[in-house]
Image 1 (cartoon, rainbow, N blue to C red):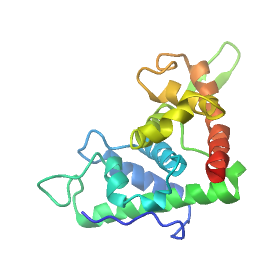
Image 2 (cartoon, rainbow, N blue to C red):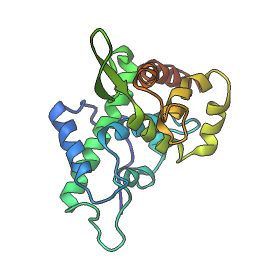
Image 3 (cartoon, rainbow, N blue to C red):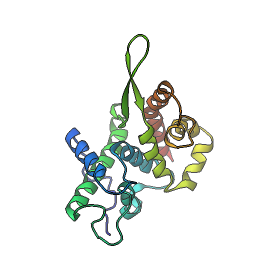
Length: 206
């Protein structure tokens, strides 16, 4: 299967809410259990852009795109998609979303927002809304799994380890926050955007 490479000069229009919902529904309807949802996809693309020692444009699309939908089928050229047209639509939406993240980090970083879940909770005084980046962080770790040796030093020490700690804590089944309550997960989740921008700055200097 031939897939396009990521091209930093390609279409960078942010996906509209309708397009994001459409992409999420397309992925959710796939028969593959390992297909990412829109939150995990957003984290996965962020992880790909931040992978140390490698420009994403140098990575063949076939090496990272099929991960999004749980891999290509062996017996059907279109699997797990219903048609080649549907596959192409997903690929084009993914590439646009990827490019829009890179552009936001480069040109308007403080306006960038990752796609997290928000859940309603209640305390004694008022209703509260909790951020939960578990799926996002799991998607990010999926990108890490494509280049574990490159990522290992960043998780293990130096200035980058504290930036990545919330992702490991939230995104891994064995993470420190896997069984944590809403407030702890909310605090860790809300720290991720600034951590990603800090990692992007480090990545750009490498």
